[in-house]
Structures are given as structure tokens and as C-alpha cells.
Image (cartoon, rainbow, N blue to C red; front, side, top):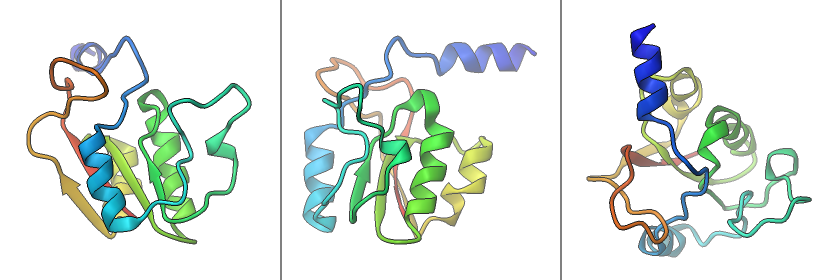
Length: 131
């Protein structure tokens, strides 16, 4: 019980918007040449990347509040093309073992990323998952 409460506090964020660092995106885009982002930062209320078919190669930095749902969707979509995820490295979760461990490649990022205009690093480690 105490561990569950600690995890909720440690992994809680005031926002669900973690803008991809430009250098990370540029590096990955130069390698994969992305054609699609199912959760663009400036999406409107009608946009629903979780319920639409993706184009490939796809880049996805999903809302972390629904990470399990997004990782499953990325895994399912990857049956049709390349999907690259930027996600928190949460190796102790069910979604990690159910889907991420089946990835073609997992790239752990050294240090903590500074998302968007943040002055400090994220409160969690990150990784790039390639399906």
C-alpha cells in the first residue's frame, strides 16, 4: 500500500504535455523520416490518434496519463509499419513487459530529458522504443 502511494506521488505530473525535445525529434526523424504523428502537440478536440489508422513511419510521444493504451496501440499499428515511441522507462509495469519487451529495439536515454521549455530534467528516465 505504501509503495503504491509513493509511486502515485513520484510519477504524478501537473501536466500530460511533454513536448518532445527538438534535438531528439530531429535525430530520430533524420533516421526514420517520419510521415505521421498520432498525437501531435497542437491537436484539436476532434483529433483522436488512438482510434485512427496510422501512417508509417510513425513517431509517437504519447500522453503519459494513458501510456498503457498508447503503447498497446503502437504495438498493434507496428504490425503494418515502423513505429517509434518516446516514453518513460517504466520497466516494472505490465505494459512494458506485454509490449515494449517485444520491440525491435529499446534505446535508453542517458540522463533526464528536458521536455519543451522546461528548465530542469523530467522526474523520470526516458527511452526510445522502436517497433
